[in-house]
Length: 242
Image (cartoon, rainbow, N blue to C red):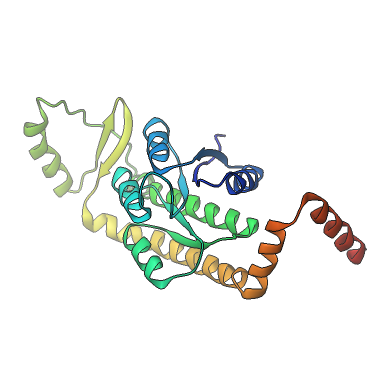
């Protein structure tokens, strides 16, 4: 089974290495990028399930990169990392399509939870049309439209959908989109929206617990610790648990 793919964008090697290892240990396939331009090139050449990016990346201003990222792939969820909390930044990032804002240093457990949630939400959205068709007992039957026939076929496509049918749009035999009646979509999507809201509520509660001053201080200490200090702390903890 293919692993979920994460594009990690940051210009700090230490953070890239730490977060890449953590996400890889959680089962994700991680691709690194050191700048906004490099990230966009990666997106042009491969498919990803989620993007985890620092707001301030080289070669482009932070919000300009987020805008380009959202325009390039509107359905791709992305998570933004910042150095300090700011309501203005949070609002601006959300308006540009950001799924979540995380303040560095980010605890590795929190990081894995956030990325995992983003992947689950993406899957839930992708499952809407196939599940809708399954409930109706229909198969995905593509209508092939060439550039020459597009104008004539458009009327047929619209008529099919308006009469309650479903049209699958493909590119090189690969399904890319589906057109379904709005009434049917709204009826089916209510259950999916409720599921997504439940996931969001659970995660926000978890994130709130992990973003307390005490938790953040512990995360910072762990992030700055040397391997020897971490090993010593682990031994001490194990002895206390014994």
